[in-house]
Image 1 (cartoon, rainbow, N blue to C red):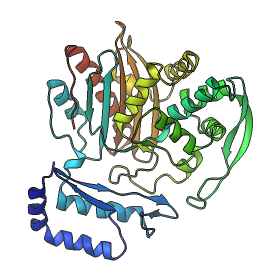
Image 2 (image 1 turned 120 degrees about the vertical axis):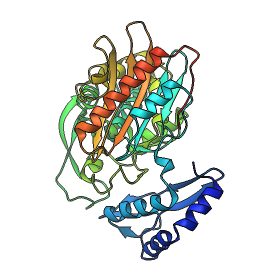
Image 3 (image 1 turned 90 degrees about the horizontal axis):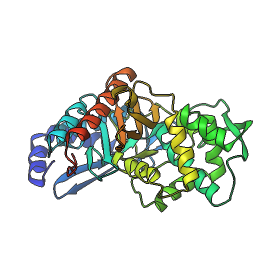
Length: 368
């Protein structure tokens, strides 16, 4: 963590590079806002898509340039925000070791649902959710079922993308497809991560703003979606999540395990809704090399995967034969290839499982 005195010293040592960055900024490549907290320096850059990437002030630039500026910025101010810093237990040390990322960022959070024991690595940093956001979309729809707005037998059309160029419109065009029951749509969107089914229910509930409102009502912060799946997929690739933090359609691992914990504990929906959602998660067929691959065969996993450009993730509930349950969120960027990212997810899941088994019931810590 960079203290104020250390930051000043690094700035003096890196004057040349800093001036280089200043020149880039003057040329129109904004770094976003820099906030110096008492013990750390944070870079928060916000983007919106429009034939490239646009910063908060509205100037346009390409994704490659963003990465260059971010890399240069790190060379001056350090990269402590990208790596685990303190370890309060052997469990934490082991988890931080397997979650260490030299070729990107890895974010992890897990909580023992019986004791509240939590562990996390970069758990307060934002990561691209990709399709893991579909859990909250389904939950928002199920809240509507509980309120009598629609039923699980109500039928809605799939939302099928119409071909369009990346960033050619704020929202990717779609057309209505085959009608299916809500129960079928939920099954498709969770078990097979079907995007057409997801956008069908997203439209029914009122779009991303309605899902964000549902998440806010749960009391969870640091979770937000901005686009439907058709737009998210069409415009994917403009930003490398291993180098740049894009706050759109992102969440922190801690926020995600809070969401999973509440769903598992039945806080925000009826027993019927909970059973429908967790039942679908238990039948997920995607991500066989992720969380599931790192655990013994007798352990059950109810989960949802996510994949986009240079990022892979898996979130869910791990349940042991003796009745223990853990909410887990693992987000991996970079690492060279998708198989490499999936292998990291599996090894992290294994470390979490073995760590909780090895620790006593009084364990409660966080790695940040």
